[in-house]
Length: 77
Image (cartoon, rainbow, N blue to C red; front, side, top):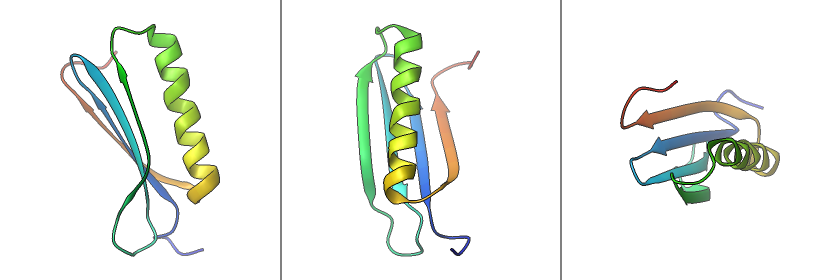
């Protein structure tokens, strides 16, 4: 496996919604292969458990996790 193979994940935590997307990192044109969105009014523990499950599922389907980016509207605790 080369350094460019695997899966990359982006997490955006907004004021009303959280979006998680995974893309293949295989050196080809990047395309989203998994996407999930939820309202931020949900239980935080359940939301983070769902995010973790999506990341694990994406890595299992598309190769090992290579990078994660997080965008936040404010401080991350």
